[in-house]
Image 1: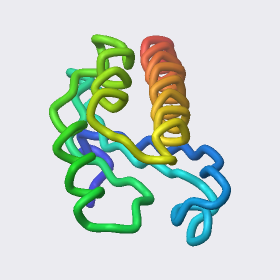
Image 2: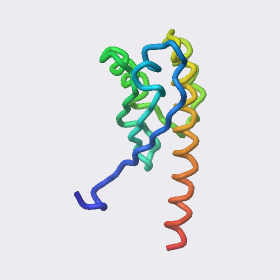
Image 3: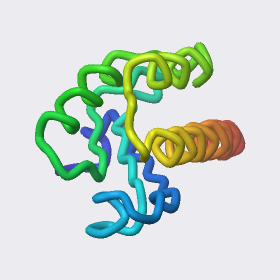
Length: 116
């Protein structure tokens, strides 16, 4: 695939999973991978370090289509309202870290492309 054909960016972040949880026993961390369209800041795909397919599917449906130009607080609130598990705090920390990384990197890329 040519670099010119790639229209999205991939952002990852991790947070320590809560001890005693199944996530901790298997992965040690809560991980999040977001594929984002930087032209409109919409999440087009998402993957999480959940053990079950149902949890994976649930979070995909919750995050795909979310516009990060609105910030991450609404998505965090949605997670707090709809996800009741020991790892919810770790998932939120990972999501916030991914959002921060995305904002920093996308700003850096835009600044670099202006100077080129």
